[in-house]
Image 1: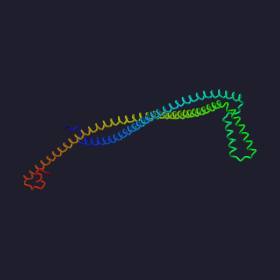
Image 2: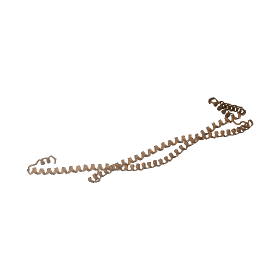
Image 3: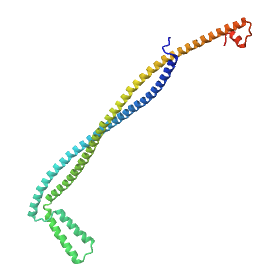
Image 4: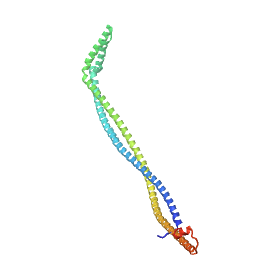
Length: 294
């Protein structure tokens, strides 16, 4: 192989290439670290997006459940309110009939209230220490109440119907109130979940932008990594060629040294031979030269 550069040029260039390769490797390691960091950032954001999407799906299921519950409760409340409206109409009609009967029978109070008054008076007689005049007055009141109660009982059917309807109305109103509370709580829970979904959707949009930026950074570093890696391969290829040149230069240098050494030995031998021919005394160095060594 012919030498294309001088020995000094080869070794100088080889040293430069090694320094360049070392610097390239350092840059390559640095870019690779940034590339991997960008990729990991992108992966972490992607995982977070997947988790939020899963949470949104679950929230939608719960929200829809609350919405359905609110709708069903509204329907129940409407049904109860319709029943209440009908019962009120019935009560109004019965109240008119009750007033008519009370006027006909001259009933001042409904039987249940008269009975309550009687029971209170009887309780006083049983539990309190009354004087004889006081006891007589109370007994007289009880007698009057009994008479009034007997008269009122003649229209007791209508009073009982009104009372029964009033109880039904109370029960219906209670059910309607419970349904209304459930409507409010379910609607509130549904709205809360809906707002969470909106916030999560906004968060996903922000994260997707960050994911895009992280991926773009990754691609930039990946491209730079490929370019630097290509440069490194080219440099290594050049160094391989320079090493061959350096090896050749070393061989050439060795051959030149040997050629010079052989020439010196031959010259020395010729000189020793002349000394020997002249009868001059030979030195140890002369004898060594004659043996082919310097």
